[in-house]
Image 1 (cartoon, one colour):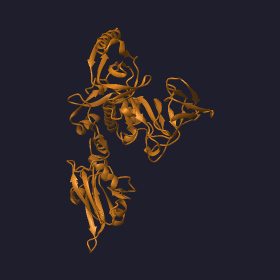
Image 2 (cartoon, rainbow, N blue to C red):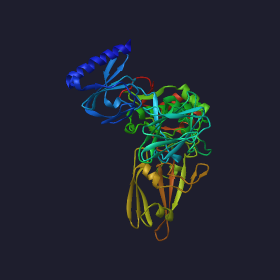
Image 3 (tube, one colour):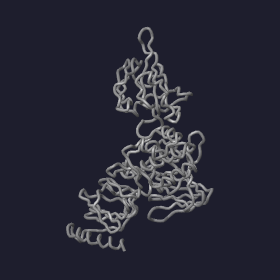
Image 4 (cartoon, one colour):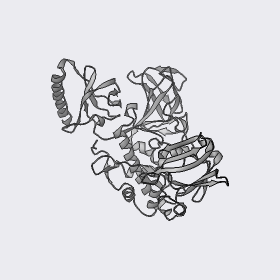
Length: 488
């Protein structure tokens, strides 16, 4: 009865709109799913691409209420959205979805998370696989053990089924398994240490993005998504309370990314790499799944009802590292769960620095600025050919790539980037004053914003529950369930 009431309200509103826009020119489209949306364009699953009027009106229908909402509240993945067109533009949206996130749309990266643009991909199911072209219903099935290969040629999707038959498609492809099945990707492996062929829940959506490339989006329920995030972000052998804190932080991060839709114009909420949070780089694990189940639906919100920022990182150094005495202080090691990254140091020779920077012989490295947390945010590198100022914590970490480093109790090999930007510099010069080497004394791992994962481990080992952990690292937030209406 409530839905019928809402429909009568919608009819009245559309008729009122017709009087404004000209009744004969208003076209109301059936409710459809949003695949991509920006301020100026929307792509529906069945209606295709449509321009959005600068004066668009948006209404949300839930229970017996009709509420005006901003365009930003219309999210990728919403399944029941009706549009009214006037002179070819969307002039109003009517949203029947509740304003909370039920599914995640994850951009799947290629091997080693190098790119979200694929040239080819291979799937196989654990039960039965279905490949179907959007709109036409054309496609085929594959049984367990069979492999399906998909690629793009001249902007069109091609597939080779499990029997070797070639298919060509004009439209987007959907790839999905039986209800209890999973889909395995065979064209790359994931994992640190022991590698594996990743298996995914939900369905895949494949869309040509160029003449020889396509996007692969995994659409999966929010909770199922977390089953493959939490063990990828935190070792599943760690205490359950730490894993529960990670589950809440990861769920909050995912909901925030879906709400703010920074990638909505590309059709996904998050990537599966460190550009968002790592997804399916470790197999699902029973203990991590338990942590997710025991915190089901819980996210963090600010006092004003908006979603909290739940960044997390590996290890905190405990104190601001300003000199060697501070670096040698290990009093906070236990609080960081005895992380090997609590303290580290690495040395760069003059030759190594010269190869890193195109400035000839390097003559000096100086910290020019730090932020409130003590992270280096400006680094000046001087050489025989000039000077460069590297700005930004992450850019500095990417510029200084140690070939090895010493940690609290061991050593580590080559690093793709500096563990953190919390460091100070000591220089060694020869008798003539020429720079021989630079040693960085650093602490922690990651960007040092939000929750320290090793710190959560230390707190859990000391007997704290996940609520205490969350309160420590996100003190201005409180728990709600993600099914509550959120403010935008």
